[in-house]
Image (cartoon, rainbow, N blue to C red; front, side, top):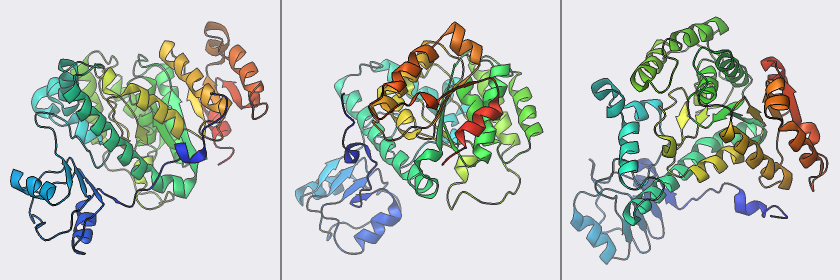
Amino acid sequence: MPTPPPADVIAPHTHPDEIETRAAFDRRLATGSLAGLTVQGLRLDLDPVPDLTATDVAGTLFVGCRFANREVGADLVRRGANVVPPFSGLPYPTQPSHLYTPEDLAAGFAEGGFAGMYDTRVYTHFREHGGALPDVREALGQRLHDHGVDNALADATRAWLATHGPQSVVGVMGGHAVPRGSVPYRMAAVLGWELARADRLVVTGGGPGVMEAANLGAFLAAWPADELNTAIDLLAAAPDFTDHDRYTAAALAVRERYATPPAVPQQRGPGLDWARSGGLAIPTWLYGHEPANLFAGKIAKYFSNAIREDTILRLARGGIVFAPGRAGTVQEVFQAATKTYYGTDGASGAYVFLDRAYWTRELPVESLLRPLFAASPFGDLSTTVHLTDDVREAVRVLTATA
Protein backbone atom coordinates (compact mmCIF):
# COMPACT_ATOMS: atom_id res chain seq x y z
CA MET A 1 0.00 0.00 0.00
CA PRO A 2 2.10 2.93 -1.25
CA THR A 3 -0.27 5.69 -0.15
CA PRO A 4 -2.95 6.05 2.54
CA PRO A 5 -6.55 5.60 1.43
CA PRO A 6 -8.74 8.68 1.06
CA ALA A 7 -9.94 10.05 4.39
CA ASP A 8 -13.60 9.31 3.64
CA VAL A 9 -12.80 5.61 3.25
CA ILE A 10 -11.67 5.14 6.86
CA ALA A 11 -13.55 7.89 8.73
CA PRO A 12 -16.50 6.76 10.88
CA HIS A 13 -19.75 7.83 9.31
CA THR A 14 -23.06 8.92 10.76
CA HIS A 15 -25.98 7.20 9.06
CA PRO A 16 -29.14 9.24 9.75
CA ASP A 17 -31.28 6.67 7.95
CA GLU A 18 -30.43 3.91 10.46
CA ILE A 19 -32.90 3.41 13.32
CA GLU A 20 -31.38 1.58 16.29
CA THR A 21 -33.62 2.50 19.25
CA ARG A 22 -37.31 2.10 19.92
CA ALA A 23 -37.63 5.82 20.72
CA ALA A 24 -36.19 6.81 17.34
CA PHE A 25 -38.42 4.23 15.64
CA ASP A 26 -41.56 5.59 17.32
CA ARG A 27 -40.72 9.14 16.28
CA ARG A 28 -40.36 8.15 12.64
CA LEU A 29 -43.42 5.91 12.77
CA ALA A 30 -45.50 8.90 13.93
CA THR A 31 -44.77 10.62 10.60
CA GLY A 32 -46.49 7.79 8.74
CA SER A 33 -43.43 6.76 6.76
CA LEU A 34 -40.41 4.52 7.28
CA ALA A 35 -39.61 4.52 3.56
CA GLY A 36 -35.94 4.05 2.75
CA LEU A 37 -34.86 3.63 6.37
CA THR A 38 -32.93 0.77 7.96
CA VAL A 39 -34.39 -0.53 11.22
CA GLN A 40 -31.87 -2.59 13.17
CA GLY A 41 -32.29 -5.14 15.92
CA LEU A 42 -35.51 -3.84 17.50
CA ARG A 43 -38.05 -5.84 19.50
CA LEU A 44 -41.21 -4.82 17.67
CA ASP A 45 -43.05 -7.70 19.32
CA LEU A 46 -43.10 -6.01 22.74
CA ASP A 47 -45.80 -3.73 24.11
CA PRO A 48 -46.75 -1.33 22.80
CA VAL A 49 -46.65 -3.38 19.60
CA PRO A 50 -46.54 -0.88 16.71
CA ASP A 51 -49.25 -0.90 14.07
CA LEU A 52 -47.43 -0.87 10.73
CA THR A 53 -50.39 -1.63 8.48
CA ALA A 54 -50.83 1.97 7.22
CA THR A 55 -47.15 2.95 7.26
CA ASP A 56 -45.19 3.55 4.06
CA VAL A 57 -42.41 0.94 4.10
CA ALA A 58 -41.22 1.16 0.49
CA GLY A 59 -37.54 0.29 0.48
CA THR A 60 -37.37 -0.04 4.27
CA LEU A 61 -34.84 -2.60 5.51
CA PHE A 62 -35.65 -4.43 8.73
CA VAL A 63 -32.56 -6.27 9.99
CA GLY A 64 -32.67 -8.54 13.01
CA CYS A 65 -36.03 -7.20 14.20
CA ARG A 66 -38.63 -9.32 15.97
CA PHE A 67 -42.31 -8.97 15.06
CA ALA A 68 -45.46 -10.08 16.85
CA ASN A 69 -45.91 -12.88 14.30
CA ARG A 70 -44.68 -14.03 10.90
CA GLU A 71 -47.59 -12.41 9.09
CA VAL A 72 -46.33 -8.95 10.10
CA GLY A 73 -43.00 -9.59 8.36
CA ALA A 74 -44.70 -11.12 5.33
CA ASP A 75 -47.03 -8.10 5.02
CA LEU A 76 -44.06 -5.72 5.16
CA VAL A 77 -42.38 -7.61 2.30
CA ARG A 78 -45.58 -7.52 0.23
CA ARG A 79 -45.67 -3.74 0.65
CA GLY A 80 -42.10 -3.18 -0.53
CA ALA A 81 -39.91 -3.66 2.55
CA ASN A 82 -36.92 -5.94 2.82
CA VAL A 83 -36.85 -8.12 5.94
CA VAL A 84 -33.81 -9.98 7.26
CA PRO A 85 -35.21 -11.65 10.39
CA PRO A 86 -33.12 -12.77 13.36
CA PHE A 87 -31.60 -16.18 12.74
CA SER A 88 -33.27 -18.83 14.89
CA GLY A 89 -31.14 -21.04 17.09
CA LEU A 90 -28.32 -18.56 17.63
CA PRO A 91 -27.27 -17.68 21.20
CA TYR A 92 -26.23 -14.17 20.13
CA PRO A 93 -28.12 -11.29 18.45
CA THR A 94 -27.64 -10.96 14.72
CA GLN A 95 -27.87 -7.17 14.90
CA PRO A 96 -26.87 -5.92 18.37
CA SER A 97 -27.87 -2.31 18.91
CA HIS A 98 -25.37 -1.60 21.70
CA LEU A 99 -22.01 -2.78 22.97
CA TYR A 100 -21.74 -5.48 25.58
CA THR A 101 -21.26 -4.80 29.26
CA PRO A 102 -19.44 -7.04 31.76
CA GLU A 103 -22.87 -7.98 33.13
CA ASP A 104 -23.96 -9.11 29.65
CA LEU A 105 -20.98 -11.39 29.18
CA ALA A 106 -21.11 -12.79 32.72
CA ALA A 107 -24.87 -13.45 32.65
CA GLY A 108 -25.51 -17.00 33.86
CA PHE A 109 -22.34 -17.36 35.94
CA ALA A 110 -24.21 -17.30 39.24
CA GLU A 111 -26.38 -20.21 38.12
CA GLY A 112 -24.02 -22.26 35.97
CA GLY A 113 -20.47 -21.12 36.64
CA PHE A 114 -18.09 -20.38 33.79
CA ALA A 115 -19.76 -22.92 31.50
CA GLY A 116 -23.14 -21.22 31.99
CA MET A 117 -22.03 -17.68 31.14
CA TYR A 118 -23.41 -15.99 28.04
CA ASP A 119 -19.84 -15.46 26.87
CA THR A 120 -18.98 -19.16 27.18
CA ARG A 121 -22.23 -20.32 25.62
CA VAL A 122 -21.54 -18.18 22.55
CA TYR A 123 -17.97 -19.52 22.35
CA THR A 124 -19.22 -23.11 22.59
CA HIS A 125 -21.68 -22.44 19.76
CA PHE A 126 -18.87 -20.78 17.76
CA ARG A 127 -16.69 -23.90 18.07
CA GLU A 128 -19.53 -26.29 17.28
CA HIS A 129 -20.29 -24.44 14.03
CA GLY A 130 -16.87 -24.35 12.46
CA GLY A 131 -14.96 -21.85 14.58
CA ALA A 132 -13.01 -19.48 12.35
CA LEU A 133 -14.36 -21.30 9.25
CA PRO A 134 -18.11 -21.45 9.86
CA ASP A 135 -20.79 -22.86 7.61
CA VAL A 136 -22.69 -20.39 5.43
CA ARG A 137 -25.65 -19.91 7.76
CA GLU A 138 -23.39 -19.33 10.75
CA ALA A 139 -21.10 -17.04 8.74
CA LEU A 140 -24.03 -14.79 7.81
CA GLY A 141 -25.15 -14.61 11.43
CA GLN A 142 -21.64 -13.74 12.61
CA ARG A 143 -21.14 -11.09 9.92
CA LEU A 144 -24.43 -9.42 10.82
CA HIS A 145 -23.48 -9.51 14.51
CA ASP A 146 -20.07 -7.96 13.86
CA HIS A 147 -21.62 -5.25 11.69
CA GLY A 148 -23.94 -4.42 14.55
CA VAL A 149 -20.94 -4.18 16.87
CA ASP A 150 -19.25 -1.87 14.36
CA ASN A 151 -22.28 0.43 14.46
CA ALA A 152 -22.57 0.30 18.23
CA LEU A 153 -18.87 1.05 18.64
CA ALA A 154 -19.13 4.08 16.37
CA ASP A 155 -22.11 5.30 18.39
CA ALA A 156 -20.32 4.72 21.71
CA THR A 157 -17.12 6.50 20.74
CA ARG A 158 -18.66 9.38 18.77
CA ALA A 159 -19.38 11.54 21.82
CA TRP A 160 -15.97 10.83 23.32
CA LEU A 161 -14.12 11.78 20.13
CA ALA A 162 -16.24 14.91 19.69
CA THR A 163 -15.39 16.02 23.24
CA HIS A 164 -11.74 14.95 23.53
CA GLY A 165 -10.48 14.31 20.00
CA PRO A 166 -8.87 11.20 18.51
CA GLN A 167 -5.52 11.86 20.19
CA SER A 168 -7.12 11.10 23.57
CA VAL A 169 -7.59 7.39 22.84
CA VAL A 170 -4.68 5.24 24.06
CA GLY A 171 -4.19 1.53 23.36
CA VAL A 172 -2.58 -0.86 25.82
CA MET A 173 -1.12 -4.11 24.46
CA GLY A 174 0.76 -6.88 26.20
CA GLY A 175 0.92 -10.51 27.24
CA HIS A 176 -2.30 -12.36 28.05
CA ALA A 177 -0.51 -14.82 30.35
CA VAL A 178 0.75 -12.24 32.87
CA PRO A 179 -0.63 -13.45 36.23
CA ARG A 180 -2.66 -11.25 38.50
CA GLY A 181 -0.58 -9.72 41.27
CA SER A 182 2.68 -9.84 39.33
CA VAL A 183 4.85 -6.75 38.82
CA PRO A 184 3.87 -6.38 35.11
CA TYR A 185 0.20 -6.71 36.05
CA ARG A 186 0.50 -4.00 38.71
CA MET A 187 2.36 -1.72 36.32
CA ALA A 188 -0.34 -2.07 33.67
CA ALA A 189 -3.05 -1.41 36.27
CA VAL A 190 -1.35 1.78 37.46
CA LEU A 191 -0.96 2.82 33.82
CA GLY A 192 -4.69 2.40 33.17
CA TRP A 193 -5.52 4.22 36.41
CA GLU A 194 -3.28 7.19 35.56
CA LEU A 195 -4.47 7.43 31.95
CA ALA A 196 -8.15 7.36 32.85
CA ARG A 197 -7.61 10.03 35.50
CA ALA A 198 -5.97 12.13 32.79
CA ASP A 199 -9.12 11.80 30.65
CA ARG A 200 -7.66 9.29 28.24
CA LEU A 201 -9.87 6.52 26.91
CA VAL A 202 -8.04 3.26 27.61
CA VAL A 203 -8.54 0.66 24.86
CA THR A 204 -7.36 -2.95 25.18
CA GLY A 205 -7.84 -6.23 23.37
CA GLY A 206 -10.18 -7.39 26.13
CA GLY A 207 -8.22 -10.43 27.24
CA PRO A 208 -6.59 -11.41 30.53
CA GLY A 209 -3.12 -10.41 31.73
CA VAL A 210 -1.92 -6.93 30.81
CA MET A 211 -5.21 -6.16 29.06
CA GLU A 212 -7.32 -6.92 32.12
CA ALA A 213 -4.92 -4.97 34.33
CA ALA A 214 -5.18 -1.82 32.20
CA ASN A 215 -8.99 -1.95 32.17
CA LEU A 216 -8.97 -2.65 35.92
CA GLY A 217 -6.93 0.53 36.47
CA ALA A 218 -9.42 2.51 34.41
CA PHE A 219 -12.31 0.85 36.27
CA LEU A 220 -10.93 2.12 39.58
CA ALA A 221 -9.83 5.56 38.35
CA ALA A 222 -12.24 7.31 40.71
CA TRP A 223 -10.77 5.45 43.69
CA PRO A 224 -7.50 6.24 45.50
CA ALA A 225 -4.35 4.31 44.63
CA ASP A 226 -4.44 2.18 47.78
CA GLU A 227 -7.82 0.77 46.69
CA LEU A 228 -6.29 -0.22 43.36
CA ASN A 229 -3.64 -2.17 45.26
CA THR A 230 -6.31 -3.78 47.42
CA ALA A 231 -8.26 -4.85 44.34
CA ILE A 232 -5.16 -6.38 42.76
CA ASP A 233 -4.42 -8.28 45.98
CA LEU A 234 -7.95 -9.69 45.95
CA LEU A 235 -7.63 -10.73 42.32
CA ALA A 236 -4.23 -12.30 42.99
CA ALA A 237 -5.98 -15.04 44.96
CA ALA A 238 -7.01 -16.38 41.53
CA PRO A 239 -3.96 -15.48 39.40
CA ASP A 240 -4.23 -18.01 36.56
CA PHE A 241 -6.83 -17.44 33.84
CA THR A 242 -6.88 -21.17 32.99
CA ASP A 243 -8.67 -21.70 36.33
CA HIS A 244 -11.79 -20.31 34.71
CA ASP A 245 -14.32 -20.42 37.52
CA ARG A 246 -12.09 -19.03 40.27
CA TYR A 247 -10.66 -16.41 37.93
CA THR A 248 -14.10 -15.18 36.90
CA ALA A 249 -15.54 -15.33 40.42
CA ALA A 250 -12.69 -13.15 41.72
CA ALA A 251 -13.33 -10.55 39.00
CA LEU A 252 -17.05 -10.42 39.76
CA ALA A 253 -16.36 -10.07 43.49
CA VAL A 254 -14.07 -7.08 42.86
CA ARG A 255 -16.64 -5.52 40.54
CA GLU A 256 -19.27 -5.85 43.26
CA ARG A 257 -16.98 -4.40 45.93
CA TYR A 258 -16.31 -1.31 43.80
CA ALA A 259 -19.69 -1.05 42.11
CA THR A 260 -20.40 2.43 43.48
CA PRO A 261 -17.45 4.78 42.94
CA PRO A 262 -16.94 7.82 45.14
CA ALA A 263 -18.41 11.07 43.85
CA VAL A 264 -15.96 12.92 41.61
CA PRO A 265 -16.27 16.05 39.44
CA GLN A 266 -17.66 15.21 36.01
CA GLN A 267 -15.10 16.40 33.49
CA ARG A 268 -15.60 14.06 30.57
CA GLY A 269 -18.93 15.24 29.22
CA PRO A 270 -22.45 13.75 29.35
CA GLY A 271 -22.71 10.00 28.86
CA LEU A 272 -18.96 9.40 29.11
CA ASP A 273 -18.62 8.03 32.64
CA TRP A 274 -17.90 4.57 31.21
CA ALA A 275 -14.47 5.86 30.14
CA ARG A 276 -13.48 6.24 33.79
CA SER A 277 -15.35 3.09 34.72
CA GLY A 278 -13.13 0.71 32.79
CA GLY A 279 -12.66 2.22 29.35
CA LEU A 280 -13.10 0.09 26.25
CA ALA A 281 -12.22 -3.55 25.51
CA ILE A 282 -12.32 -5.12 22.04
CA PRO A 283 -12.01 -8.91 22.37
CA THR A 284 -12.85 -11.79 20.04
CA TRP A 285 -14.48 -15.18 20.37
CA LEU A 286 -11.56 -16.61 18.41
CA TYR A 287 -9.86 -16.53 21.82
CA GLY A 288 -12.99 -17.49 23.72
CA HIS A 289 -11.10 -20.15 25.66
CA GLU A 290 -9.72 -17.25 27.71
CA PRO A 291 -12.06 -15.80 30.36
CA ALA A 292 -13.69 -12.49 29.53
CA ASN A 293 -12.06 -9.32 30.84
CA LEU A 294 -14.83 -8.00 33.08
CA PHE A 295 -13.41 -4.58 33.97
CA ALA A 296 -14.05 -2.57 30.80
CA GLY A 297 -16.92 -0.07 30.80
CA LYS A 298 -17.98 -1.11 27.31
CA ILE A 299 -17.02 -4.24 25.38
CA ALA A 300 -17.04 -4.55 21.59
CA LYS A 301 -16.76 -8.31 21.18
CA TYR A 302 -16.33 -9.63 17.65
CA PHE A 303 -16.24 -13.00 15.99
CA SER A 304 -13.69 -11.75 13.44
CA ASN A 305 -10.25 -11.36 14.98
CA ALA A 306 -8.97 -9.47 11.92
CA ILE A 307 -11.67 -6.79 12.26
CA ARG A 308 -11.06 -6.62 15.99
CA GLU A 309 -7.30 -6.08 15.68
CA ASP A 310 -7.64 -3.42 13.00
CA THR A 311 -10.32 -1.63 15.02
CA ILE A 312 -8.15 -1.39 18.14
CA LEU A 313 -5.27 0.12 16.20
CA ARG A 314 -7.53 2.46 14.21
CA LEU A 315 -8.96 3.92 17.40
CA ALA A 316 -5.69 4.28 19.33
CA ARG A 317 -4.54 7.54 17.74
CA GLY A 318 -3.26 8.93 21.05
CA GLY A 319 -0.50 6.35 21.30
CA ILE A 320 -0.01 2.72 22.19
CA VAL A 321 1.70 1.16 25.19
CA PHE A 322 3.36 -2.19 24.62
CA ALA A 323 4.03 -4.16 27.77
CA PRO A 324 6.16 -7.31 27.46
CA GLY A 325 4.51 -9.98 25.38
CA ARG A 326 5.35 -12.61 22.82
CA ALA A 327 4.32 -13.29 19.24
CA GLY A 328 0.87 -11.72 19.45
CA THR A 329 2.21 -8.51 20.92
CA VAL A 330 5.04 -8.32 18.40
CA GLN A 331 2.52 -8.81 15.61
CA GLU A 332 0.52 -5.88 17.01
CA VAL A 333 3.66 -3.71 17.16
CA PHE A 334 4.31 -4.05 13.45
CA GLN A 335 0.67 -4.05 12.40
CA ALA A 336 0.41 -0.69 14.17
CA ALA A 337 3.71 0.41 12.66
CA THR A 338 2.37 -0.23 9.15
CA LYS A 339 -0.54 2.12 9.81
CA THR A 340 1.78 4.78 11.24
CA TYR A 341 4.35 4.49 8.45
CA TYR A 342 1.72 4.97 5.73
CA GLY A 343 -0.53 7.33 7.71
CA THR A 344 -3.41 4.97 7.09
CA ASP A 345 -5.57 6.31 9.89
CA GLY A 346 -4.06 9.76 10.23
CA ALA A 347 -1.50 10.96 12.75
CA SER A 348 -0.31 8.47 15.35
CA GLY A 349 0.69 9.07 18.92
CA ALA A 350 3.67 7.74 20.81
CA TYR A 351 4.83 4.13 20.80
CA VAL A 352 5.72 3.49 24.44
CA PHE A 353 7.51 0.26 25.30
CA LEU A 354 7.43 -0.68 28.98
CA ASP A 355 10.52 -2.58 30.20
CA ARG A 356 13.54 -1.24 28.35
CA ALA A 357 15.64 -4.38 28.76
CA TYR A 358 12.91 -6.61 27.37
CA TRP A 359 12.39 -4.55 24.21
CA THR A 360 16.10 -3.92 23.52
CA ARG A 361 17.65 -7.27 24.44
CA GLU A 362 15.11 -10.08 24.62
CA LEU A 363 12.95 -8.88 21.72
CA PRO A 364 14.86 -5.95 20.14
CA VAL A 365 12.00 -4.41 18.17
CA GLU A 366 13.40 -0.92 18.68
CA SER A 367 16.30 -1.65 16.32
CA LEU A 368 13.80 -2.39 13.54
CA LEU A 369 11.16 0.18 14.38
CA ARG A 370 13.30 3.34 14.54
CA PRO A 371 14.87 3.03 11.07
CA LEU A 372 11.50 2.04 9.62
CA PHE A 373 9.81 5.13 11.06
CA ALA A 374 12.73 7.33 10.02
CA ALA A 375 11.97 6.42 6.40
CA SER A 376 8.23 7.18 6.54
CA PRO A 377 6.82 9.13 3.57
CA PHE A 378 5.55 11.63 6.15
CA GLY A 379 8.99 12.43 7.50
CA ASP A 380 11.15 11.11 10.30
CA LEU A 381 8.77 9.53 12.83
CA SER A 382 11.48 7.75 14.82
CA THR A 383 11.05 10.17 17.74
CA THR A 384 7.63 8.66 18.43
CA VAL A 385 9.35 5.56 19.86
CA HIS A 386 9.92 5.66 23.63
CA LEU A 387 11.33 3.02 25.96
CA THR A 388 10.94 3.28 29.71
CA ASP A 389 10.77 1.31 32.95
CA ASP A 390 8.67 3.99 34.62
CA VAL A 391 4.87 3.93 34.27
CA ARG A 392 4.56 7.59 35.19
CA GLU A 393 7.05 8.56 32.51
CA ALA A 394 4.93 6.60 30.03
CA VAL A 395 1.87 8.56 31.16
CA ARG A 396 3.72 11.87 30.77
CA VAL A 397 4.67 10.97 27.20
CA LEU A 398 1.10 9.96 26.35
CA THR A 399 -0.52 13.01 27.91
CA ALA A 400 1.96 15.65 26.71
CA THR A 401 -0.42 16.53 23.85
CA ALA A 402 -4.07 16.04 22.89
